[in-house]
Image (cartoon, rainbow, N blue to C red; front, side, top):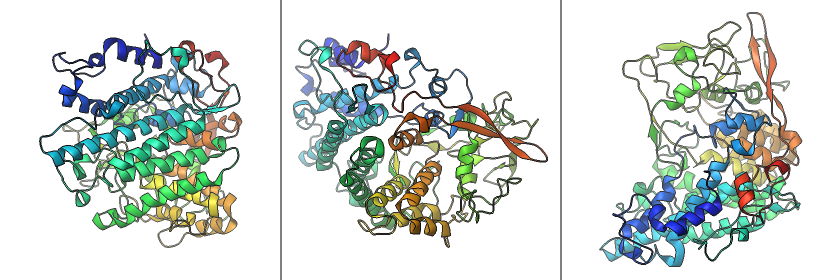
Length: 585
């Protein structure tokens, strides 16, 4: 039986805390004596953290790109692919599990925050250390609630069937099911949800350390690097930048309120300042490349804990290299990468050769995608372990067993030393970089351009400069970026004004954040109707004499919004569905 928000709350009260928090201290505590078990109270925060995903393999990351024009999911029965093709049903909702997950995370921290339970609990004997831990956990709880609410908003926020911009039901305390009727739950307005998230962020900033860095810590047993995968002041400010950016976007800002763009730029700039000035003095270099297999990368602002294994390698590689070819980048995404000189492939100065389309391209293409003829080289001795052949009849051609459907394969995230044929298969740790340097540069560039244009300074940076940080930086193998010495196309777009520069920003978001689950949200916050989402995606057909393209599939959305889960609609009679999903009511 599927859980609903109502069922989650009811289960919390009817069974008491004991069934909601596992493991338990022999079942000896109740709500009345909970304060005698400080480890259990702290456990509410820990369990909320435990709900965070740790791998990009989840449907809300990699597979979410499969619902955009960037990626094709190989399995014909995958729920996200069916959703993207307009064949989804309430019984195969790929998002419902995240609705339940987000509210579960919220309920944990609500229990911790209720009546300042966590803030008034003694965890340590030493008074000073205890007070420090109390404050850290209190800040964690507010930040986590803000994050789970932000996730609810970016997934389900939208225009409802009654014409209003709505978000999610706001729940800020454990609810007694005997005193509250499920019909009392309804979606708050979009603006109310944003205000709730921002207030929680501000409360978190009152308690959290400025940054989880040893050189800023007063007690490295409780602060600093020991909290690396937890929230801090910098990551909360970054979250505020992302919230304001979404709220300022065309889909949610019908009056084009400029102050929202200004706030997005302000908080992004504050985080950029910290990265350049504080982290810059301790290893972060915005001109240097970074490795996705480094869970301690200076690029990170906030990340998940790391996992180690070859799951991504198996998922991405073709059957010929012992993979499953489960996801394939589209021709449209490959076309979005410019030439090595920074010009788009359709620009007269791009020097694009349709007969040799993978030559002389932006080096970021080769870091993100395996194209025809690409090699996998062992990093220890430069041994060529595999050469991709996506030509007609080739072993990696689309449609083959355990091959992608697009004649392209994902390289991003992979450790080049992995080889399934080795006796001792080598793997590297990987994390989800929830928020990183690139996110802030892109957020600032988009917001600042809206406020003052590409070249006017705002909060210490220009929109052009923020994009330049990303276009000019080196690859992880040391290959120079496209703007390492000069970037005439960036200059051209900046000189042309806001409209052309915003088009460049949007394209940079596409290629910098590909396979991170961001484009799905970007397309919807930029859209004014579902028509712009319903595009075809294609693949190359490669022969000895030519390279042509053919359609693989077409996206089909009746709405630019995600439907509120059907189970919630049936349990909460005051809930209003998003436009375009009348069959989910």
